[in-house]
Image (cartoon, rainbow, N blue to C red; front, top):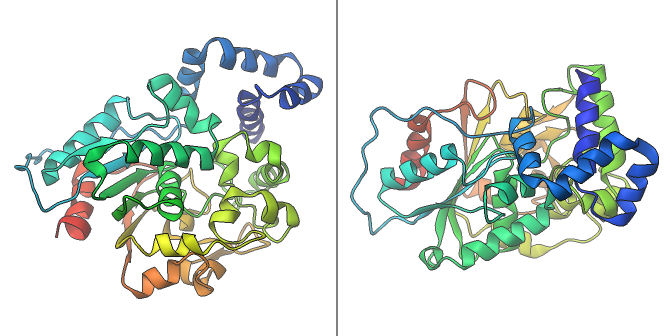
Length: 353
């Protein structure tokens, strides 16, 4: 299993090599198989999108409908809702369409899923091949182009879509996010490969080490979304992490500090953090509640209030918590195993109430 995961990661990195230097490097070191992947990305993007959707890395929303669901009449005193999908998913997929429509109807407001591509193919592929920062910029551009969102909105993110929302809040937050529900989110980054928990397996720690070794340089940080939020606890004190990590920059762990991140973070009134207790995609699982592996360890886990980014209030998390803005919920199953009824419950409890 570990070997297959490493192979898939290498192939994923190869997807993004339209750049001559990267392609030449892959051509010289990995041979024909990866060049076939490059050719597929260039000549048959619809096939690549299908492979991504069907891969074990995909986080696609397909939740049971709420049997008691009833649409409400239009509410003039509630803000609209914006949704952000996970990797391998798309705003154009049936599951995202339905949950966006149903949630908006539940509250009686306008709702929209914001894609980073203009169709199901590019939106799916961009979830891998468009960098995290660039994805946030596209996300913000599309939000600002929608006049129905000009007065602010509530946000719901699934899996990797939570990185989009976090980035939007810290980099822009204009129009502002009133409240966000982070469902099984990558807000703290990840420190392991999906389905391979480094805290429980020496093989998985080796895979995570390999990911970290490749992550922090301008080439890889400019190629793959998932690399941009990979947080290797053994590398966070290195010059390469501080200089090149996009996640490190958002955390104010980098070479410079951006006070705007904390200011913008403070403009949002509620952060609902939903953790999947059986999650096998996000490691450590505590990351869905703003925790992470202790620096230097892939076994010991810190909760939110034990982290330096909380105690030192590096991007406004402690200030938000002390103001009563951080809320915690759980689901019993694996990644993105939840129901509309649960989602509507969180919406009613923290936003509509």
